[in-house]
Length: 467
Image (cartoon, rainbow, N blue to C red; front, side, top):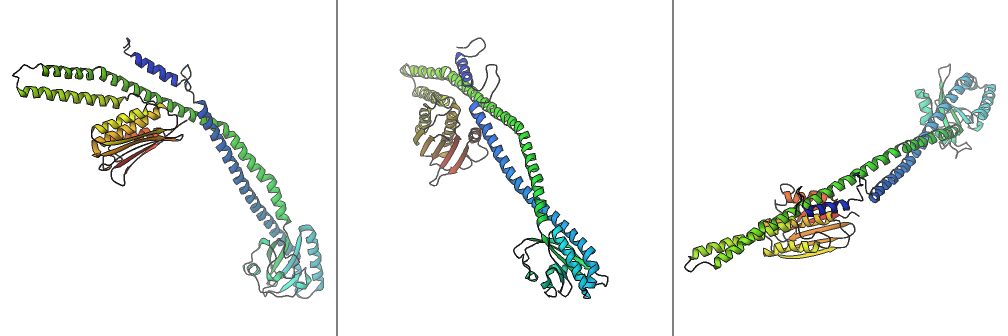
């Protein structure tokens, strides 16, 4: 019965039920809110992920900062050691070396005093002066004076290329066999000495790595805390904005789900109205016409030609076929019951369509989780489309419809022993299958179509069960 606005009483009941179904997501004033359990869980998980990413970033930045501090401290200390050695070479050794080469013992004593002073001031451990032949002209380790060694690359580069450089050394070279610091890590510096006579010597200075340790400590106390604090402040500044964005995304997802559910509800309501109009209108009229024709056929007067009786019989058969087709269409448009408990019956009705065409069918419905109406409807639509394809394209003799599910997913598998997928079930050009794919995608699932090993087609639909 319809009211003055053209809305049936059943429609109002459906709308009222749909409204009750969405009370948890829509306020009385129409304001849409995200479902509290799912939305809060999504935001909470995202915040936890951000915190974990932040901790990972702290670790990476901390390690990178320590590495950078090590590198900067080393470069700074080596540069300072090179400047100090160059100053010592130009001020102390360069003026005295010509006298020492001539055998002046006072020059030797003067250099010893200068080196001893540098030992306490700059941490100098060992000093050597080399000539181009690999002879040690001077060393504060006196037993090394006069020894000869093959020139290593460091001394040769200093003399030949007039190059000053510094690096860390463990005194493992052959010329350091007289050194008592073989296991120590020292700063090694080479400085060229150009004498007035034109001869070029190499000054080798070893000092402790105290400069490196001091520079490293200063950088660690300043650079590392500053970098981590800056990153922490950036994370704290972004966290409220990120949480707000996550809430908005969660609300948008809830709104999309609400609109999808509302659209499905409206679609089901329209299907019910069409099915009711067909049942109360055209189907009843055609059924009545069939009964009338049967009565007319029974009341034909004697002597009526066989052609006239045969014509009435054919018309009656056409009417019965039309009524059967319309009833099948009514079931397709709106099955009797698509609740979870009514799903086995709805699947069995689909199987009956195949059995009426001489196709042997087995059905299995085993669902062990509570399903929402949209999920049940999607499963039914997938099975219905597959049944329609079997009737139209497969030329099959046997088929099966299996609907199984647990807490995580719902699986709909429809198989037949027909002529295989072919082009009818391809990725394009088949509207029904594409609608199944779109519906499954919206519900977090997928559809695969494959050819069975023994011939025929298997359509597998996986739908995600959302709690």
